[in-house]
Image 1 (cartoon, rainbow, N blue to C red):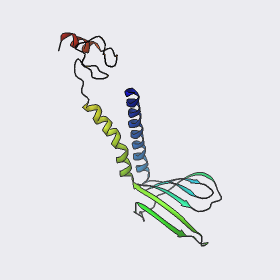
Image 2: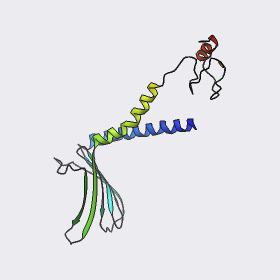
Image 3: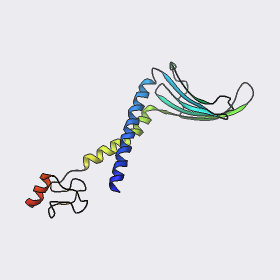
Image 4: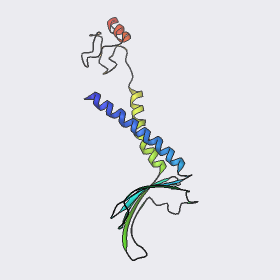
Length: 169
């Protein structure tokens, strides 16, 4: 079970690090191009857009005829008119139909910081784990009494751990 948790933790740290690298790349690109990934359904549409160092997730509740996914890239605006983080509202369009919309905007600094937390914790935890001579490399059990095999996890120690265990420390 410990091995499975360690594999899951390593995979999670790697995934978080990959997401961090992608967020940095999108952050840099957001000053050159404004990307929009949008999905449209019969009763709503929503998507993600990046512009001027921000990532915005939105959803609009309004009847649509088209369905599907779309992607577009344009030049970003010269300045950011709206610096709000969270916006919810009911708006009226030109045909007097009320529709609701919500947006969640976050600066890429927050996204990069959040995706770096777990990999930093993982590296810190790995660096803190010191190897004691004569201990099992897998679980840390003291091998002085049983230098040939670890009684805790069954691992065979390396030559230097076995020599240290026979020498009596």
